[in-house]
Image (cartoon, rainbow, N blue to C red; front, side):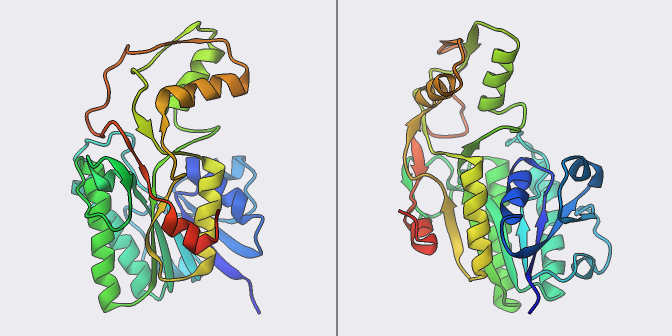
Length: 283
């Protein structure tokens, strides 16, 4: 019996590289999809690499990927500018057209990463049963894609998992992320790090855990629906940053209150983890 075949879009991105490393530990055949094969080849990726632009995929894209059993769809352009109209004017139709073509060609199982921004400005513990109220173009476009795929599923059935991501951190994160900015400031020898007041509460996971959860869900090939990928535990951004400084033995002082709090997210929210725990048998 041949090994399960899993294709990954956005494979050369931050999450994608950790996901490929996690898949390499499984007994599966992996197809890494990227616009620039050189980026993955330089990283020593052992998976079969397919160069493809999802904005204009060639006919027969499902066959080009070797007719995978599962597609883990990470790709999304235009980040981290959450307020850009690009997300629903350009990215949303591109994404849906590609995924629809894959499903109609015979893709049996699809896992797509969503975002906690689909919940909008709702505070507290956010469960998958809440009505989504996206308050920025990125959250709106992701939520719309999920709904479109659910309508498609009613016409052309497939196993569908919508993995709603919260916050994450790890080496190799984009330069604009908090962790990367702090690390860069330390490497430049700066004594002070400017940030917000840090009292906002968020839900953070190491990217290694995010990759493990995504792979575990994908391997199930079940019709799971929406599931939060989160820690389930709120932590203040100040405490998180202080923890990073302590863990790494860095000597840098926080200049709290230098920047205003973001206006596109509430002061305190985190994910409800019960559904993730139920599906993966986590504590």
